[in-house]
Image: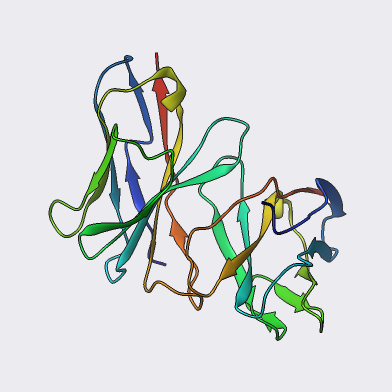
Length: 115
Length: 110
């Protein structure tokens, strides 16, 4: 069964450093998303991406965050200058279509620890 | 702005059916009911969704009441691997952001 692949599974970084989280969505999917989950809290929407541009972002997704699809297969989330409160699980997801007849496939996540 | 209400937890015996309720009394005609689950900090996993008809797939069945104000996810033969947090999510036809609540923590016991 096709899956969304995320790397690395765990990243430890120092506060103030830049990190890039990588995702390989399912190959025929057109819509891509990032969600995060702080330990013990709810899964939260960060951003959606379609046709090489952001289609929607949450208030969490401030200027420190950016996304891109650099080579047609990878989908990355960059945090420019990490803060302690960025420590969380980050989940990438993709869907074949935007709309309600399709579920979203999530990756297994990257655990980001900012120290 | 929670659109759904789920019990915080429930236990189920292995091999028995697990019936997970969800109230969504303010649901509109253009909103679907989705179910996802999350097994111990893994990525959420899509289970099933429906608009007004009952739905069944290889994982579960979804029963939606006629007035659409509530629904029940049925896991027909729960196994220990079904232990997870189950999320009931209402999603507008023109929206795609999944809003996860606290969900129901389901523990399947041998």
